[in-house]
Every structure is written in C-alpha cells, then in structure tokens.
Image (tube, rainbow, N blue to C red; front, side, top):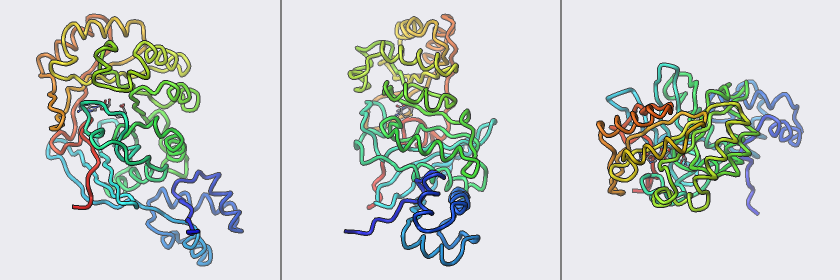
Length: 345
Ligand code: SAH
C-alpha cells in the first residue's frame, strides 16, 4: 500500500493535537504548527520553533500541500487581482482579491469545476472535477494574503463551485480560518453563497448562525428558474423561499438574494413585480448583478437603463435592493466568470 501522508493543512487544531499525540509528541505543538500554517509557512523547515527531530518526523508522515501560483492578473480599473492556482493533482482554480472600503476581501473557490450547471455561469462549463479540501480552501486565503502583503478581513465563498455540495470541507475550512491561531476572521465577515441546496441551508443555520448567507435566485418563478438553474427542479422556489425564511428566523439575521440580470430572459418589469411579490415580508436584501459576459453562453447582461428600471420596481415595492458594483470585469474575475483552466497547454 502507498504511504498516504496526512494532509496537515486540512486538520483542525483538535485533530492536529490528536495527530501529534499519535506521533508521540506533546499536544501544545499543535497550536504552534497550526499557526505556522496560517502564517504561510511553505515547508516544515520554515517552522523554526520545532525541533529538528519533529520536523523530520513531520516531513516523513505529513504533507504540507501548498497551492502553486500559476498566474496573477491585475485589473487596471479597480485594483482587483485574480489568482490562478495549481492544485497538487494538476487541477487548477481561481481566487480573487478585492479592495473594499470596509477591508480586503478574498473570493474563494470551493470546488474545481461545478456540478450545478447554471446556464449563464462559466464555472459550470466543464462540469465538476472534484471537491476542494479544507486546506485547499484555506490556502487560497493564506497565499493571497502573503502575495498581496496585506491582511484579509473578509471572505466570500463565491468563486467556482457550490459550497454546500462540499459541506464537510467547507465547514472545516470556516472553523479553521476563524481560529485565533488561524486567520482570526470573524464569522460575520464571511459570506457563503448557495444556489439553494435546502437541507444544507438548514444545517448551516444551526452550525454557523453568524455567517452571512447569500442565495442565488435569478428568477421569480419555477418555469423560468428551471430553464436557467437545473437545481430548481430538485428544490423548487417555494421551498427555497420557505427555507430562506427559516434561516432568517433561526439566525435572526438578514439574508441576501442574488439576482443576475440576463438580457431578455429574467429582466422584464413583470419579472421584477413577481419577484417583489415573492419576497414580500422576508427580511432580505436583493443584490442585482447585471450578467457578466461568458462568451460560450451566448447570453448578455441587462443594460443600465433596464437595470435601473428593475431596481426601481423592487424599491417601489419596499424591497431593499442594490446593484452590485462590478469588480475585475476587465480580467474576467467578476461573478460567474471564474472557470477551470487547463494547466497543461
Ligand atoms: N454556487 C454558488 C456560488 C457561486 S457564487 C451559488 O450559486 O451561489 C457566484 C454568484 O455569481 C452566484 O450568485 C451566481 O449565480 C452568479 N453568477 C454566475 N454566473 C454569473 C454571470 N455570468 N454573471 C453574473 N453573475 C453570475
């Protein structure tokens, strides 16, 4: 049998403690190692407060699977940076660094590719390759922070993949980056976006009540939603809205609905009215995203005037709504533009 090395970057502090005990080491070493990982150590050699003996024991039994930066694109418009990372198995993923007034934000991917098949999204084009490990999610933040030389205060899980289709690893990742010796990121500074996997939304409300939840709606009825989001056939809109209400009731927090405006598909005044009716009485905020161009889909974003009109209809009906400021559009780093890249040319 192949000697499988322990993926040390995916362990929680507790698991790391157990692991070190198994290696015949003291438990307190766990926090030291954990904190080196989140400080961006590239190897066990870098962990200078560990004994030589422990370092070699770790190299023998464990792997520090770092992501490799393949390329960085800088937006000329707004300081956004898109990172292309290689995973150890040759797959690749993208992450985005954004500067907002409230702090630096990293948008991370949760899977290599995506299974959900939304018709307008670049991430769906080549299907799902595999789930990311908790360590691979953390390392996107660690590596970006190190490369940018700036502290990251906010995380959005809105890159490639459906986070709730990789729930276990997502949940481990969130707990790890929240750790004081990890990245010390507040739960309220994290947002997870889902296309609406209802059972996981309910679990999430219990496990991570402080993390912001965003739900990708994109249509005010099932007929339309079924056409652009296959997941809608499994979890119809009425059930999704009921689950959203439940999430709000359980967490006591407002929820965000994302609505990508696709020209001639879901952006009419009628669509806006129907959406407003559907959302009436829900403590939510609607984020309108004029569709970002993904050449293969043949779909186009709603123009400015029509976007304004859609916004006004919602406002008139008392819905809290904003148009998302697009960052990184010139480097294909905007919502729905992240994709699996072929590393081998
Ligand atoms: N799978 C999750 C995470 C993706 S988050 C989800 O569906 O929510 C990315 C957000 O961008 C989602 O709301 C997604 O629907 C939206 N999106 C996808 N393609 C887009 C595009 N071309 N233009 C604008 N938004 C898009």
